[in-house]
Image (cartoon, rainbow, N blue to C red):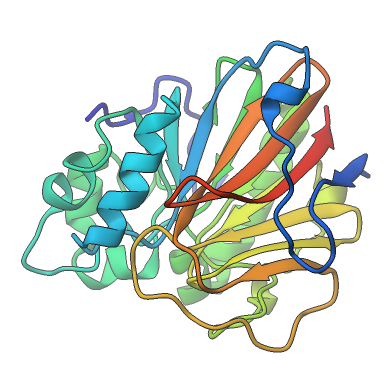
Length: 282
């Protein structure tokens, strides 16, 4: 596995309204649309997985799905490790030989954050960082577990994120943090991270923690919870405001397809069935 060690990283703990269209009905019925429907060239294929490090058959099925679409890199939204007896090579590298850009989750802390740092080449100062994809998208990864433990750390993260979003030359900006600002499942919304991401300059916010797939539109910003990479699934409960779809019976992965004018999202179940699609303008 190619671990991301910071080729295009800016890291520190101290330091849009969107044109949105959904190709999935409000009832959550699968759309037949796919990235092949556009004549524009796809610049990257980015696979997003979360809450997966359990060494299960479900995890293997999701990783096999990801491999079928040959992504340029795999982005994780945290909880890369659930098993104390297994390390990251067993739980991540053996499943995802692609370049992996990882966010840290609470279970990564639970089983020893030093092992996460050792494997991914991070430190406590560099778990917040920027990854620039070849398509021109910037990903701003936050360590929300540390932020929830420490108010000063969270405030520093917000100041850092505001500055990095402002200074970024990318025309599409994605914030990645493990704990979802909004969620309709077991853990619910993370109020301490309900920042005005749109005003800060973000186009999309990706999270995990709850083991569902959910897409939410709030205040002109799209939020996606993608925690269905292998750990046991949770149930969707009372839907939060802006929830467009919530799936609790399907393991799978989200795929992002950037073109010159938009970024298309496609969520596929581990069997390859398309269950949700959306488009965001660049």
